[in-house]
Image (cartoon, rainbow, N blue to C red; front, side):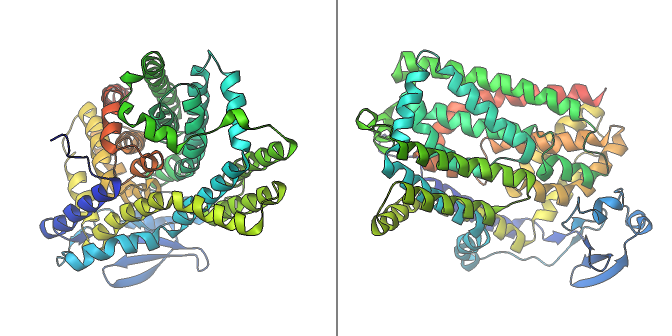
Length: 496
């Protein structure tokens, strides 16, 4: 039994893809009608099975379709994706996926997620270039010296800053770039790599779970529910502060145990492997002017990326371009020869190729569900489960339902536009505000994100070469504590 190893992230996802393929043979196929807004023609487009019709873009049209959303949410671009129309679910002829579809799904997933895959690969190239200059080594050495005896500040700083990005603009995929950069810093502070993973990933997870002004979850979900995004904002701020406090306490306590006794680390058996992966010969590196300029350019890449996403509506193409230009500038500053630059950049990108493939394979799981027409069926039956519930049970059940649905629909914006028009009216029937459903959506999606294999956790762990089983062992006590806390808060808030 000792020789049996936990499967790799890629294998886990392929197993999940196989199980979902089998699910398409068991779950009835079905689909909701959808309604999209055509800005150029100022018309709604209603899609029902293979039939498409145009409807006038008026509030009366929305009321006729039982959609409780103000017209301006469509016309001003707040809702820019087709939404499901309530009470239009219809069972269809089964579309079971076969072995051929299963084999094709990772390829389709890689093609569909090409934007984030290229971002990851270019980031890998940038990290390869900055590491080759020695600038990062020198920076780590100085930071480790500055934090000596106060290493917990590193945990607080990283977790809070990443959470701030998560709660404001959905800082998630972008965190992949930070693992190769920050893990060596945590190792230099005498923590294990799990502390670094937790600070980055849990910071992002809690930030997005308790989103306040995040346009990709809070705002789009509130719009699709027909309410203002400020409704329920106070409760989400409370949850953000409370969950961050719980998570920071957990990470800092674990980190102190590891500092005192490295054998307490859940990845102690990988200590040498991870140390070799992120080895830095900091004592031999002098912090020259060229290295300082290289680090400044490196830091500016991330500052400009964040500013672009927040203020300029940038997305993957623009973000990837910034990292490519930054790589070239660092190469020029450090006087790296052209052939050496190419070889180093390609090697750095290659180091994250496994991560990129994981992202593509995970997307392939959603491809199978979409082709098998079972996503809307799962949503239909999930919405039927809450009929006749009292307020407290409804709030908790809705949170659990959204947690389960997030396995099949890991995209926060996709989940919002597909489910909110169906789920939010259920709040009216049990006598609670629709912000309860919006919060349930955020908390359910966010909590399951901690362990969701179709999310980003497997890709994040792959950067550091840590197994999913080790992560589960580490995070499960915190995961359970946050579930209990969240359900208590949801139950109480439903009666307020």
